[in-house]
Amino acid sequence: MKFTPTLRSAAALALTVLLLCPAAASGQTNLTMKRAREKMVREIIIAGGIKNERVIKSMGETPRHEFVRRNERKFAYEDWAMPIGESQTISPPFIVAYMTEQLDPQPTDKVLEIGTGSGYQAAVLSPLAKSVFSIEIVRPLGLRAARTLKRLHYDNVSTKIGDGFKGWAEHAPFDKIIVTCSPDKVPEALVKQLKEGGRMVIPVGERYQQTMYLFTKKDGKLVKEALRPTLFVPMTGKAESLRQDKPDPLNPRLFNGGFELFDKKTKMPHGWYYQRQMELVEGAEAPEGTRHVRITNKQVGREAGALQGFPVDGRKVKELEVSIRVKTINVRAGEKRRDLARLTITYFDEKRSPVGAVSIGPWHGTFDWDQVTETVKVPQHAREGFIHIGLRGGTGEVLFDDVKVGLVKE
Image (cartoon, rainbow, N blue to C red; front, side):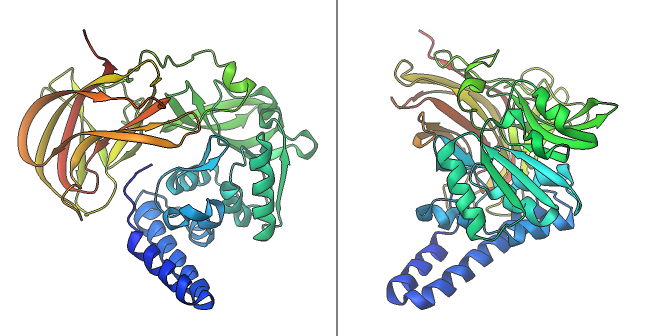
């Protein structure tokens, strides 16, 4: 997720052509979308580390703009999640590519997807597998996705409305299973329906601290490999209400704000997801504990930072105290003067629509470790917040440690 559109000029041009000449506009719009998709593949998918050529090709050919709301198509190839209605979102392009690469679908595979959503993930899988079976529990979304997939001739994709955690027994076993919603643990029905030797990619964990796992079925049991921190929208209905660890929106706080907890294999800090150009640094320089993070960017406009979500009820919590330790080295603005290192909190309502944002910073130039503490407002309609730390399109290096969000101290 990021919140600074970079396609406004192209979108404005396409709109002008549409008003002047509808026939020419169709070709212009297609060309605009094609160029945006090529940029996405080059600057987000490949630059982000995706190497599977088949996955890269599918991402470059799948029209993501067909799976988002019409009035938001100009942002379709930005690397952020976008609302699609019913309190759900379409995943960012990189996450779709990453999960697909980890799944490693083969031309002979039968793939099960849990959580159709917009239908975009199924569309990306379509040319990579023999058949794709996709289940969506939210009826309006499932029906809309089915219509879109049919209109675009993804003929090897089958969809149905139902509880995805029960799987699709009549078509089992499946070579691969991909889950785009996050349960506390892997549903047993999916374990049974996965073929021996098959792979499953699924985010598992608490509401705001999830980890993407790759499971491989060996001797009837799942062998897991932790991939990276992630965050998916809440599950719908009973599955979400039955979570064992529930967030407390009256006591907002961050997890691992000091970056002391991390995955020993990947060196990625726990609790922070969508990490871009960020590295964990160990040693005495850390102003708090023994670790901090360094975020570096050399290309203007490229994403560099990390995110974390937290619950907050704006009806009860009117303000938050935010604290962070920061150090900069040759930080310069990006395309605009405001594109600099900063901390940003974006608030969302119960339907996952944005209802406001606040920032601390910006920071630029070079300075040694400094602690910044500010009190920020919480919109009344806010039900959750997403904190982003990073360069926001600027260049240079910024170091962060001891990031805290909490109730204002009396």
